[in-house]
Image (cartoon, rainbow, N blue to C red):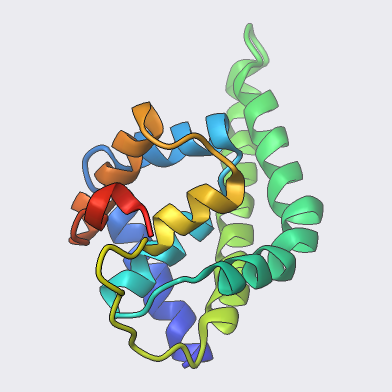
Length: 173
């Protein structure tokens, strides 16, 4: 599943991210909770496949990508954001560099998804226990983010866009 899996995850992620409200929800969760958007997308993908991201898988996935995120994804994101803030006459000259940084960041995200798909390889379909938390709810808990409020609405946006049923009982298990 690893080789074909990461390609399927990547295509799923691009399609989901393009759906109305998903980009805004992911960026809100990234900025406010420190969520890794690729892990949010992985949770959605696994749910759609009838698999569940449990706490052990999420911790293993975080460890697997931590070095890559720190050394590649996050520095590229910082460069892209800084270049976006440049104003004045240099802006036109900087724009091709910003676009190149954005493309490099996207490629780095793709590498991260390959790593994540490798972590998820071999996950068997699992039926959630009655009232059990889905992968997004488990990831929220792992982040120690507050339940309810705007964050819960953004998680529901992801669930709805991905065709995942709402978390039973508000996601408590």
